[in-house]
Length: 319
Ligand SMILES: O=C(O)CCC(=O)C(=O)O
Ligand SMILES: [Fe+2]
Image (cartoon, rainbow, N blue to C red):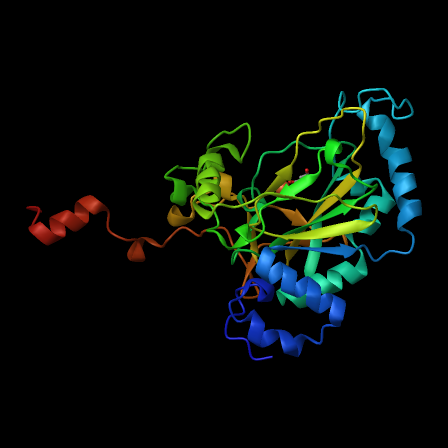
């Protein structure tokens, strides 16, 4: 394929419509690609013949960690922990869902670079997270080489705090600290999303964007693009569960970093140490195939002049 924009994920590239025919997608994959390109998300049936058995085992394994009586239909399921991060490291079924080979293959084809999972989140109830894009938490350079796959581990009703999103919001600007006039490197935040919330709200209003809710069937999954605005609706019935798993994916040959705590303009990046769940191996930060080295001290002979010496040189400093 002749793609003059290899640093843009294929599925997010303005050239995607002209490149799509060379990807050899079947009808269902072409529909997923079309949805991702236009709406920023796509729903599909999770391709795993053992999924029901995995879900049973995951609920049995993780359930006791939330400190809630799941057997009692009247109990408040939201009273305990609402999530467990990276259960894949102890739970083979969580790992197998994250590393599903057919999902990895599809993502690799759609993005134009091999995909790998790097984080899992398992939720027994709704997250009630405000609208956000995951890009402020984990982004890449070049940007947008990240996506989430959200899997319904039971039928999810409107009262159980379903996932929501704003179709088309993936095309809005990717938020950085520079964009909102804030310094991020070395800053402290209780939530990385907080400083960006007013800008997202303003964009929603400016676009007249309508929230869409995903009332998923058990076994349905949804891919969201890196910049799609999404969140968890309020769980109006605390007796319900909303078992789900999110896996976050990166793609090879990128720098992986946290924009909320970075200032791209000054080159101060909070880079991430990433390990792929699929093979347990580290994925060093790379650019054009080369590993990123920490900045080297500049040799004295080529060190740029300080501002004071430059001023003296321009205007004559007397020495
Ligand atoms: O499941 C949800 O309600 C949202 C989860 C989410 O935003 C995430 O994992 O990135
Ligand atoms: Fe998210």
